[in-house]
Length: 84
Image 1 (tube, rainbow, N blue to C red):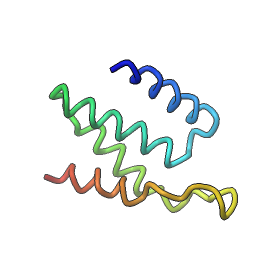
Image 2: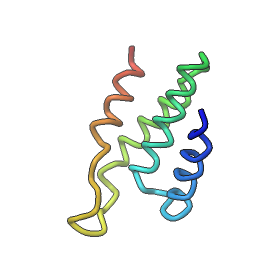
Image 3: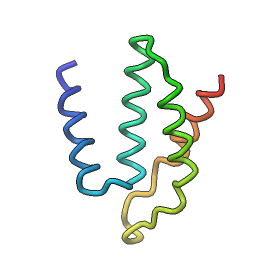
Image 4: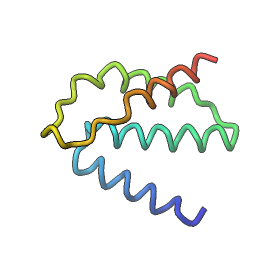
């Protein structure tokens, strides 16, 4: 619980630097999904965001071959989980 504000700050900072970074978007969506599930909130809007992110994932161009490229399969997992 004490790390939650730090996580939110880090994700917000990453998105401020690069708003279309799919990994930062995935982390925000994943965090929101976890919170919604824990508190019993509606996850439909988050599922919609995850589906939109997955659709646009391949449009993001990495800056170099050594930049991170993870996250697509994790986003697919969220989208699959939404269909249940």
